[in-house]
Length: 102
Image (cartoon, rainbow, N blue to C red):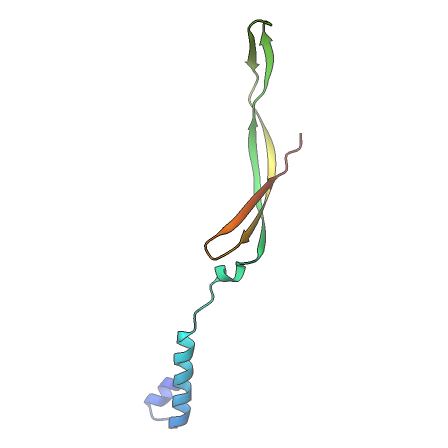
């Protein structure tokens, strides 16, 4: 609105100069991104439930020639929590905890 008023001659020189200098100053200020807000903070997230395959088997063979007899394929549902800490804008540390009841 200030620029329209300035172009139509509807504001004094002082008002137009102040408004113009504020617009120029705000255009020069760096914008803070969403990512910059999380640098230096810890984040916790739910990573869902995964099915983790388990190998099953039974001992077999003889004492002189032991073997493992493969069993049926099995999987276990394991929910996961994730923790992330951003050290800088480019480097973060992430850990994952899987909760697997046996």
